[in-house]
Image (cartoon, rainbow, N blue to C red; front, side):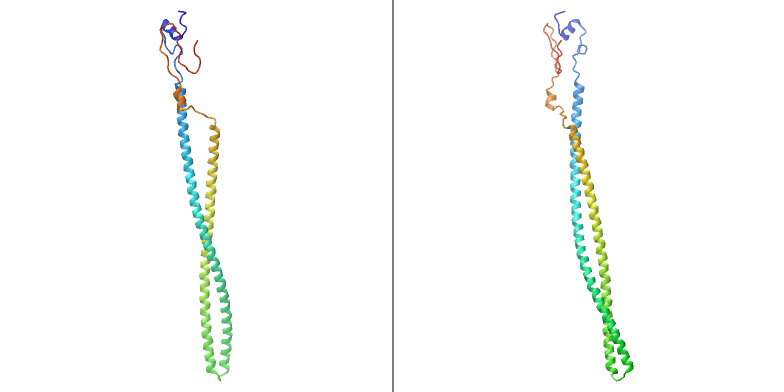
Length: 243
């Protein structure tokens, strides 16, 4: 009996031999399965993470392009409205000056009419000439009044257009401010996302899971039982198990 030094040979001779009883059963299957599951899960999470990152970048680029387009459109509207406002202000200035001139002309004509009416009452010598002059001045007065009313109407129209242009410029300015807030929000989300990415990279930079080649290279085979006296070694498990 002293000739058999291996557990397998001794167990066979004595009877009741089992691999489990001899402590020769390979027990690393669960560990390898856990490692395999972890690698698959990590790969899936990495793929999902990269996909989410690409989706977020795409959305940010779309938002940025849309915001830039709307900002350019708003800036164009603001520029146009500023030009319209400047032109309207100039027109109002000119119309106001013209109104003042017409008002002065009307006041002067009123004085002329008053004088002519007085002359008409006081003298009959040049009655016809005075009447003609009165009619002429009256017609000029009526014409100036009509011009003044037309000028007032134009000023009212220009003031309405000015108010509308200022309202649109204000709306465009609010739109630009809103778009700036959206861009700032998107930049903050990108920054937070970048910090999360850097944190994960820092936490996993030293992790080196077994490659498929290394997993395939693991020796999990057992040698056949030899009924002779020769020494039989158990399968390699990474440690020296020969007694």
